[in-house]
Image 1 (cartoon, one colour):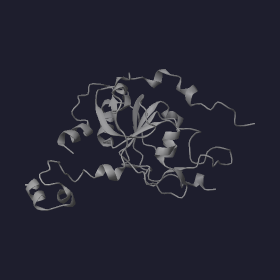
Image 2 (cartoon, each protein chain N blue to C red):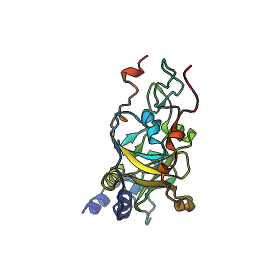
Image 3 (cartoon, each protein chain N blue to C red):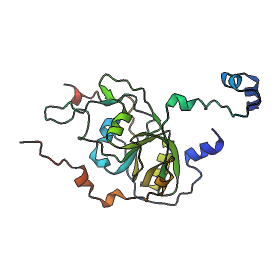
Image 4 (cartoon, rainbow over the protein chains, first blue to last red):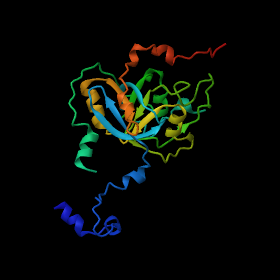
Length: 86
Length: 167
């Protein structure tokens, strides 16, 4: 049902596609340009699980121990606490 | 994006059998502090906050009355690698002097974005901390890298300050 509805509405992407083109167009296809993605990379864990992504920072492989941090101050920065006020 | 890619990105298609010790950190600091925290030496740090990098990186040369960096926990980046959900390249902050990516590149530390950090964290939380590696798809040989446990190294020596800073 969703695909029928989508086909009925002409979008910039479908209008630009050449007649008879078999290219798959989805709403997510423009995300690559917006996000300025880097080289495809992958995080591999010791249990065999893999997580796709794109490289930034130094372009090299590395091994280590995977840990996580759930702090939410990455949002509004901690550059403002009193200790940093001159 | 195909359904297969989505499944791949959520990591749900791989069985997990490992059980390791657990390590979590709900630190109330920003990424400049976390990345320079010596306690993260040798670790691949996954940040669960969905948008990272949007306030750039402050100056490393600004110091307090004791000569210590104002905005960092040490004199250098200590994490082995960084894993984030969405990396914000278009940073904006009045104290920012460079982007997170530029800082990591200058520090020779690799990072990866576009990862489903929620699924990844749930896996680490359930199975415990485990070894990992970041590989480049353009160079398949990097996939053959053996897992190396940083805890067998002398991390204290690696993360320590090597010159005296007081009289």
